[in-house]
Amino acid sequence: YATSIDLNKSENVITIDFTALSYSYSDKVQYEYRLLGFSDNWNKTMGKPSVTYTNLESGKYNFQVRVKNMGKNQPIRNLQINVLPPVYETLWFRALVYFVIGFIGFVLIRLLLKNTQGQRNILKHKYEIEKLESEKKRIEFDNEIKETKKRFRQDEINYKNAQLVSTTMLLTQKNKKMNQVKNRVSQIVKETKNTDAKTKLKQIVENIDTEFKVEEDWNTFESHFNEVHADYIKRLKEKYPDLSLTYLRLCACLKLDLTTKDIAALLNISPRGVEKSRSRLRKKLSLPPGGNLLQFIAKI
Figure (cartoon, helix red, strand yellow):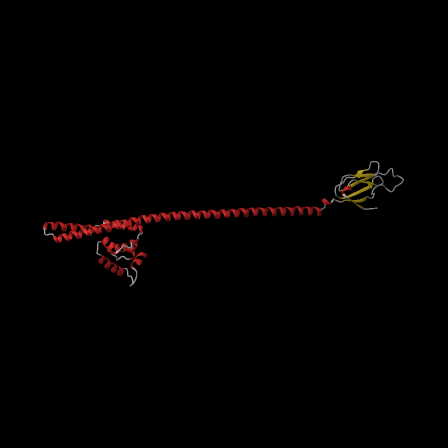
């Protein structure tokens, strides 16, 4: 009397027996049947009123059977057959599997991303270290170049300074000797009574004075001076345009910290004349009373 039955997946081979309630002609009765969900066609019984189905898939079926040869409008008997799916075919199991697979995939992706990020951080750290090392080496190399240039420049300045000192000493000694010769000749002029000899000796004194006025020696000195003290005289002229050549030369001598005697010999004036020129130079430079002339000139 059941109208439906539930079967497990393992019970997918079933046999259904059926019979009509007609005992007089039971052997004459013919049947038709079909299993909706499996086949929509009616099938006739051949002999024994039963039917067997094998390997039914999970799902819902409706078995129908009716008498074929007992008149029209015979009722149809229905039996609902439910073949339950196994656990692994259920929707919730599939959802769980998808969830687990998705979760595992998510974890794996996270681990992969984390590992990738870790590798990137390691590479970035190594890159930063190498970059710092490279920058450090570059700075050291630049410093070495600067030090080399500085030493080279210092050696060059020392060499030029040595040339300047040598030129200054040569000019000073030359002028001293020439002054000594001039003084000795002048003394002889005073002592001699020979007019012809006196005239010739005076010409020698005049030649010595002319030699003192030659600019070649000073130009040589100024050239060496400018190599050591770049554009000093030029800056001096720009700042104090009223200074004459004599005072410009005096400033150069003071810049070299020469003694009064050396300045006198170099400029061919007396030591007393040097002191007077220094006093006038203080006024031309507007140096306040008590100001150090050498320090003032050194800062220009």
